[in-house]
Structures are given as C-alpha cells and as structure tokens.
Length: 364
Image (cartoon, rainbow, N blue to C red; front, side):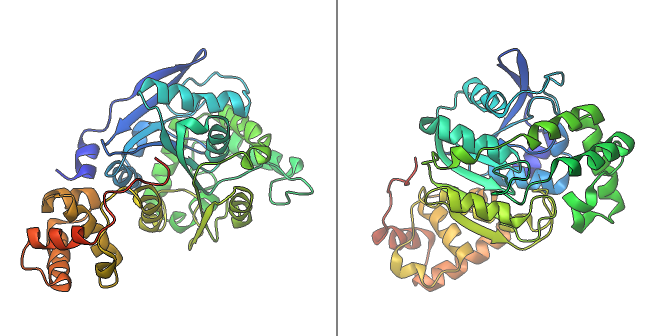
C-alpha cells in the first residue's frame, strides 16, 4: 500500500518521552535507512497533521526514505502545556529525550522556523548525535539588534499578543503564515482548528516571548555537520534575509532559495521543498547510476534508476518516490531505451557496471 495512504488510514501511535519533569509527545513513521527528527516551529499537533492532505503528504514523503521522528514541543500540541518559560537550551533537550526514547543514536535534524534554532544549537552541542542539519524558514535570533536588523522590535510584539488574545480560535495571522490559502474557506477553518488544538492564547503568547529571546548566533560557528538551509524568497513570517544569514554563518552550508510567499511548510510548493530535503539526505546513500548514463537521464529517471539498481520492484519504487505504478513503468521504459537495455536485469547490470556504488555517504 502507498506509504501516505497507509499512514493516513492508520497514523503512527503517539507516545511520550520524559524530558526532566515534562512529557513530550512523539510519533515515529517509516523505516528508511536514515533517522530524521522533525523539530517543529510555532505550534504543532502531531495527530492533526495527518488530517490535512498536504501536511500528511509532506510527512509521508519524508517517511518514505527515512525513519521519521516527530514531536510536539513542550507547551504545544499533545505535550505538557504548563511548562513556564524555559530557555532554548532546556527546550533543546526535548530533542535528546525523544531520540533516546526511540533508540536513535544519530539523526538528521530538520528544524522548521524557530525549531531551526533548537536544531542548530543541538547540532553544535551534540555533533556526535547529528549526521546532518536542515533548516527551513529558520531564524538565528528572535528579535532586532543593530547587527541583526531582521528580527522584530520589542514594541512591535505587543500588538500581535493583543490580537491573539482577542482572535485566537479563528484563522489568526493566516495572511502571514499561509498567504496562498488565506482566502480558501476550508483551509481557514482547518487552520483555526489547528491553532485552537495546538495551543491556547496564553500559551502561544508565552511561546512567542520565549522565541523573541532566542539568540543562537554564537552556536552557528560551532556547527560542524553538513548543513542545508532552505528558505522561500517571499516568506512573510520570516524574511529571506534570515535564511541567508544562517547559510553565511554556518561553515560549508548549502543554501537553496525557493519561490513562494508561504512560511508554513505544508503550504505552497511542497514538492520542491521535499525534493531538496530528499536530495540532500539521500544523495550519497543509494547506488548511483554510471556517470556515462547520468547525462541522458532526467532527475526523476535518475531517482528511479538508483532504486532499480537496488533491486526494488515497480511497486516498491512507486511507494518510495510517491508516484503511481504507471508513472514508474513509463520511467523504466525511458531508462531501458536510453541505456539500450532490453529488460530490467540488463539495465541494472549497466547501471552498476560503471557506478561508484556502494559508497559511504559523507555524513553517516
């Protein structure tokens, strides 16, 4: 069965890890060769994620090539709500607690929005437990400073807090977080429900007070793991300059700027975001087609060919790449033609004959 259909019909079980005196809700989906921890931003709700088609599709695609480990940060979703105002280092330890609970010794961290600060600090503090770092729509600092002019100023936060006190329960700030769907009535209703169940007005204001105090800039220079920074060019919640700052201050970081105005990770051009993540995570882990074959294959055909070389069936390739059996069959036809192969076994032999596989990934 297709990974997404299976997960939507039977979502992962929610369990709880202890981080000090706080219970942290988490889920695990997929059984890929790489552990990936999704560190959420703003507010989240593990179980409601699976009820939104594009959020579920995003998670399902990640789970198709990884063991995806998800959690709700303390104070949000299904995790303990009454947690006071902990600092970033204390909140960062929730990542360690969840990894320990699921037996993950080392993982890729995917930090979303302010979750990127947690992920970067964790990578700098525990490099032995992080194989790679991915930051999407992330920040290095939560408020303005003379040398960081993109954060909000203290007097600019209060109007937001007042609005949330009055309007929480409706589709608050949707024009900022998900402008491409701001006029979609069904999404507005879903967004309002998601916010209501993910946090209360008082709790979300406390979260933003904590986020305003974030300053992870000193940790960036200590990040030594391979890093990918992805940001949407028109992001209305976290301006693109903040993503560029992260990439410029993490040694060797790769930077990808996507089109779009949405900040929410499961809204807008989700496929491009997943594609960049998968390319970064899996780039060195599969048997790679021969260099002479690469020039003639499209990027998608390259993905299909790499899985063909691993003896995956058509059904398994379809599930791994989140495409239909028919589409896989068409790609295989093109691959056979371009390799001048008459059947699957011959194509696999050609691919492996000149390949660099198997070879070690640079960060696992």
